[in-house]
Image (cartoon, rainbow, N blue to C red; front, top):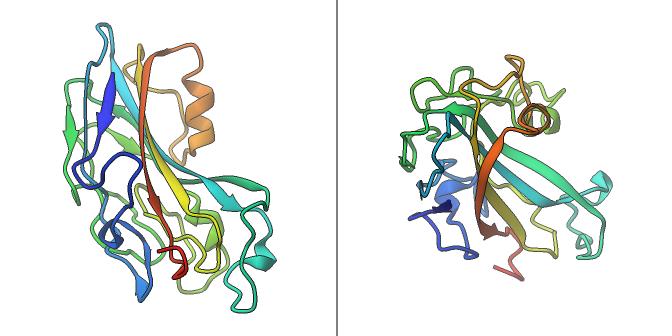
Length: 203
């Protein structure tokens, strides 16, 4: 099984059109095009995750004009998208078909393939307590790495073929819920990644 995008080349930069943040403020926040093939026989549903493994772990260093976040700072994952119960007959997701622009406080019912369910992403926690932005961020919300980060962030789109038609996750599910629920049910996995930075020194 393989996955690719017409919106960015594998390992190459992602355009601000597909990011939540841009050098001028907010980006286009459109989901990129994704397509796949080689889904194995016996697949009953697909799962799609988008994860940035390069998120800083020291909040006090984020967004500071007086310093860069060092490349060597320990990093953690930041989830940008979790979608389950995708019809195994589907072979592509069009650019902007699941997310088109910023929805402050998060999308209540994000668009997506018929029958698929979309969980909350990690902007839910990041914006928690913000009077204007706080809420449940469901579906896709794109890259917004700190402008002062010395590391170029990577965004991995991971596709899983499952032997389950419906994944046992709660309504307000996270990527962690998905990863737990699909243990022992993965028939194949494919991934493609792009990069993004708001650091003018690196861009």
